[in-house]
Length: 250
Image (cartoon, rainbow, N blue to C red; front, side):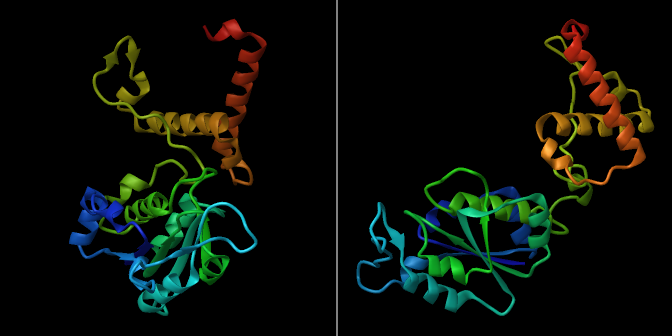
């Protein structure tokens, strides 16, 4: 896979190349990561890349010319061009999986008040990593790269990604390790029972419980197994009982 990042602050990615996940993927030839400074494509000795917005308004806008000229140099017929802005579609694990199946991705990192709209129109899609505003698209680009690279075959063990949060529209169940008791808090007995079936059921129940409590939106439209339906009904009944009698849980 080739991932190319177009940015005006390439130095932000220097330590990112040393990230164990990225470094391993590069060393295994699973990833070619290119960081391109699109300021080099701006005209004039001052590498002028921004202008005031037409029609007035605060801040500065990234000009079309340097970004388009940079794109013309790095884009191939296989490239998927993605602009990273707060106005894009929300980034999800499903999208990470989709991108992991691609051969060539170009990430456009905005700055200032953003891109000239014609740059965004040139992109194949626009992605947002959350409902907040950052000073630039570099951190979102790192987020996308990290989430995609870890899904590439050979980067990490495949079983490590199978039960993570957002797989199958569920948050991941709680995890524990030694010591068995710490400051009065114990590892659930079932996890130490050695009974694989009981442990599986506990993990499923806790995933459903956590998702229902924190991210019920993930369950909307999801197809449930009969076992999951039964567990959800039990969880809801337990919640109703606790709400009717708050002291019941103490």
